[in-house]
Length: 629
Image 1 (cartoon, rainbow, N blue to C red):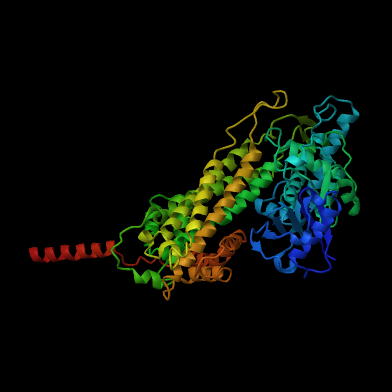
Image 2 (image 1 turned 60 degrees about the vertical axis):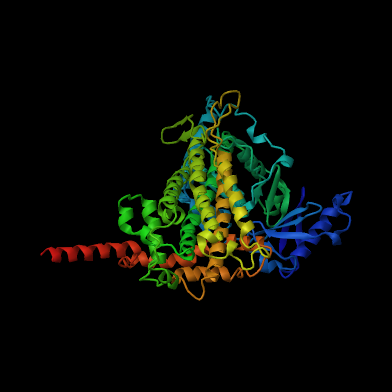
């Protein structure tokens, strides 16, 4: 029998479901019945049957119908949010399927892609034999130090009460299960390096908790990124120790000790130094940063496809993507974007009836938002690559203190816990990836403005009666404006903490959360542009664009109908946003790009007004030459 965890205001409830054909509305009402039963005043809800819900997929952000069945709208590890407009009831439900494959951790080879997949629940964890041996050797040194009564910071001395520092739950939002899984997986990977002094028994219990998806309640706020992410990691450790709240698909949210017992697991019992080993490090910043950089990479390459489609709709020229131009300014990202545009728009390789319809127009060059895509999108690609390298280095770094060097027989205090590296990198990521939304919003303006597009105003017939994409463009502009504030660097700030011992901090937690927010806004703006570009094609029919871009159009139209008259647009935007998050636009067009690159197809350089002028000048010069003779 499937079981769903539902969050109603301040209550976490588990709702058993007889089968997956039950409706979302049924799930909501069942949860509300349990919520009302637990509240003396019925939680302020008078008549449950009068409650009306707006339903949204939290992970995919698509709007749903109340009558949808669970099996139709919920995927494994997916969430649904139901909001009652009048009573402000918010709920989250989740389904979970236990993975069958493992990732072996050694502390040296985990990637940001692997970490995101671990967060999605696609893999379980095991240690390599080499990692287990290093962990044992490190622990043996610490046991010797304790036995000999040596005074060593964090081992035989106190380290404060950080593991008991709890931020009031009522004031915070918890990390989602996906992000908590990422955080726990990354902490395990760091401890597996064998420089933290944690015992193999403790590490195995952490792995068992991960594999059972027993996840602590971890607030998303509360770290300054100084001695690592002390507060969030303390909450992570609390659940593993059998204290605080914990969630699993089997038990729902409950006291941690009961969740562990339900899975036959024992709480961790801390040995000397293990308190510091569990809470000291940059894993909160880094795990959120890994998600941000992976999503940034996905949306950046899909932005090239969307911009190419817009260029076709606006009847732009491909001359600006000539490889000779970009060899003169050979930044890797710029060259890559120009190549993608050529592979999607090449008139010899993928004939375009739209391009052919304006081949001999008198336009010499396009606006910057189209002509300069390689230069603007290109630096975003290079920024993402730079940040990804730092994040992947951080993923496989020992970042706690003190470090245990078994081969040297000593422990050394240092500062690897400082979050400045990922903090600065993620601030840079936000600034870089934001530009994709900034330039996209200007392309949306060109699509909607009839004086620039030669298309109906706001891409709809009977303007005035219908507003078309007018408000969608306003939404894009609002998100771009909000990003401008979010792109203010957090890592330039510092507040002294811990009685001036931690007198310089990174603010990396906020840098990571801001970067994620910026990336999500970029995804949403590009979703609006993709919708607008596909709508623009409707007014150019029966002409067709290139094969890969027609495939992208078909993908969108399989999800969203053309805009004939005004309707509620939010579901359309969310549905296309989901296509981008799932990388379906790239999956459709990417193979054409890869084939073009692998086959080394000669670059086509179609005729243009400037080429015509050059030919005319040559013929005139030749005529004058013969005349002089």
